[in-house]
Length: 475
Image (cartoon, rainbow, N blue to C red; front, side):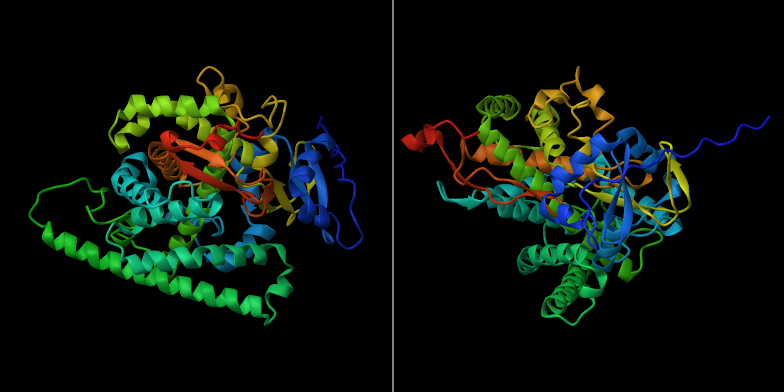
């Protein structure tokens, strides 16, 4: 006897939709409270963005089905990805599922394994230290801007080598923030608006063209450096086949591959890597410094651990493995603040998810921020508690930690991002013994990442601190 298939579970619709707009006003006005509120309506909740329905998955186990066990039914796509594809091209983060994605990921994977990233550790530390030492004591500084500058500079030197001309680095630093603002605008506006000949659209297109020109120049310079290095080192004997030359960078893995990418794909991958490097890591570092400024006990443990690992000498890359509490602090900042808050997939067929029927072509939305603020899995989710990630507690929480995604589209740069985060945090703590928030308490602002709406700090030395610096940090 054949058992008939179970009837689909009715999918609840989130309340508060407006005619024509649907829930777009909530996503624009208060996205984080709105996305986290959906959990109480069910494991899969229907929302409307304009007239179009989307399905938000609030259960992390169902999200893992979307990303891992049933990933073939959910293609990389949706409104956010489609908008970013115009900017990124067919970079690894946006290229459609299939043979091209698989080939490119396999080609790029060696760039981001731990051993390969370690070869760039020293040049990254030197780059970050030179910038942090240039800050003036007690100067009021924009933390979010500083962290983006640091992470971009560190990534450029890791990607293209230590000999990238300063003028190129400076142009990237100026151009990338404007590019990111334009890309964000492209994702939130209706597609037909982004195609109009408006000044903002033309300016964004010109900046993207300029960025591609900069990437070309960096690739050409890097290729010339590799040729020169290969010629100079021709008789030095065998080396590790995956190790970049001393003056090279991670990008050498693509330029010297047996089946290298086309010129356009090299551009696309460089832009994808650069954008991911500054927005997510810069946001995480800004929130980490904010939480350290509010929690003297956390700061003291970090400084003690760093002193035990390094003594009085500057940080070395090999010290990072001896900073487990720093990894916990950074992990908790990633958990609490995202940094990504909404990601989309597209159903490739009519599918069943948790008993709910999702039609072919529908957007399926999942939110790392939502999962990582689930009180059932992270008690008191709004509390900053690095000890959640202590070895005896961490396994219970790991299943709901999805900041880097999962499955075949998991972020390829996770190892690099964690290394870069540790380097920047350690260098700042070594250089400055006093970190003080001088702006009002920042509010999380959901754009592409969950960034602070404002955050200013002063850095100094304890022995030169004024009496006002001894005031307990605001909560």
